[in-house]
Image (cartoon, rainbow, N blue to C red):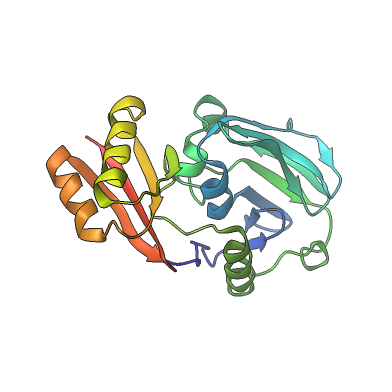
Length: 219
């Protein structure tokens, strides 16, 4: 379990804005959101890029993004012109966080200034900046973006496991995932045994400091 999230090397990043720019020839780029933003916000329910042919000044919104626990705007760090949008994410916003660096791209733009002047950096530099940012914000780089996330602590292992089971049965639908943050007295083998008993799939399991992070998927 680590703070180094996926950052493909074929594009530029602005860590403060959680946005990437992938070169598409000349001054043209595809843009989208980074994995850490998805892990913080959860799956988006609304994604609304600005219209094609819109000129957008740096430090202003390029798209509206909304999830169950987040509502805000994706801010461009550079002056750009929108030349295309991804219609697929308008119809199914969930795609953005299922595949943030591939089919979940948001828009195609023509950049109006030097990328370096806009604070865009290569992945090697972005990795260092994100590691520091994720540690500050308590964002652990999970294998998938969960549908639900809960901190569950208790005085006994049974108390913790019971609360996890109750939440899974009451709120988590078939095929959905629950990210649980917990700690001793429960242990990794306890969580694995629980998953086997109830027929849950363990999608991710590990420690960050003294905390255990586990993602269950309901079959």
